[in-house]
Length: 210
Image (cartoon, rainbow, N blue to C red):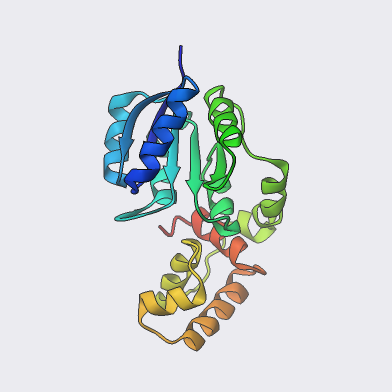
């Protein structure tokens, strides 16, 4: 039986290229979606062995979509497929139970190997990827059920940080100055007791701030 893959990406040219690649390798594309909403419907109807999921999509964050799919399909392998080699994305993906993370400039062989590995129910994470986020995932403060008094604005900034946005992007998204964002980020890290943005992102995931 051929491995069945559901492709979720908002760029048609990417979906077309992936379909051709998988066809040449004997992998069946059982569905394709351009939005998170379409993806959630197709997971139910197309019965995929693996979901290949983009992160930055129009109308929805792929990592949020990963979390929503996992609520009802805990055992379904989901591979993140992104143009961004972002440690915050990687940390959130690990925390949410993704089977692996493939950057879009990876080799064809790497992509196919990850899909087949995930389809077998095995982890497609590399040691290097896990090493990069081990410190964030193991931080004691993140494991504790500690209430932290973040202000509404700090919570908004933290959500944007966990989406992988830079300070400049956060300032634009929230309509505040770059310097104000820097201050909020410093306060957030101090309040939740972590040392960097990746750890903050994991904390946000575990506190269900999305």
